[in-house]
Image (cartoon, rainbow, N blue to C red; front, top):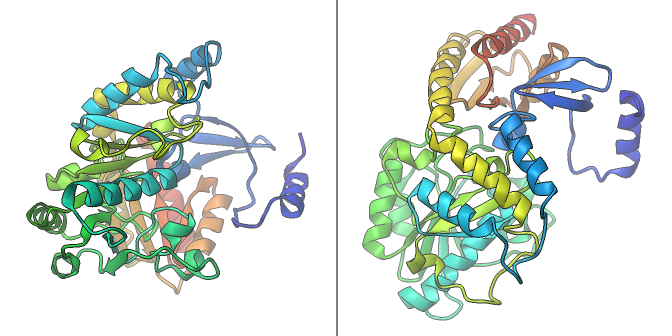
Length: 401
């Protein structure tokens, strides 16, 4: 195995530079900890943007994967396999819906949601051909396909990739009046993140989601909730929409659904919406493959106990209480719900990237976004003592700066 320097040189020479990772080379992981090629341990406080909600090498998930690897990994949707039906039924029941359309990545789930909303708009709502509109939010992050970056307002995601797909109207996040003004007879959906993760863990006003739900219901418009990062336990609920007592028409799920082992995503809704798709109109060779479905079933079973949601609530309360103590001491603001926090760094102590680099020296893995913000999203299995230790390291880094 190459050492860290050799590995970094190989990456620099042979991997496209679409990321700027910090210089740590992970080799093993267990729970909330990873070990690099030199044997040094780091506390993972990013959890692969919530894909590792259950931590590294969770024994129950690994056992499922090993068993399925010995039986069947891929057959394609041209045929049936014995994990797909149970996976769909169990996931639908977990979120209170009827049908599941399995895909692979979060971006695929979003693209699928867009196609379903448009198809529903033409066939059920009666929108004239090629006139369907979807209302989206400023500051959104739904993935990096050409359609999705076309309605992003992040120049790094958008610039240089046009021309873009039409049919999207952007309004300020958290402004229900702006949503109401944007909706018209051609609107088929409002697409939003219940909490905006990439934007810095932005939590909308408490009245926002209920108001958007009322607008959608009154105007015969689908509410499509992108819960790829916020869903499956991260915020202390199975879905972040639950905090607002709001039910979406379509849920877009991903990341944690694959247990940190395989890419897995899904669009979940009722038959009167997902039922508009017919054979040949959408698909994926690997979507709903036996390995992903088996792992997804274990994820659903784990979440059905409520244990992980409770951990996120309990440890999240401690996380936010301690982060609140840092406001005024190198931190200007803190946001978030559950085990998810956006922390705005005072420019006088450094940029978000610089603070993450210093945390790396203290053996804590975190990620910056939008210049001055860092995000903490540790696995839901993190021990309270380890969480406290990570926050101690953050306080020390800020004091050193």
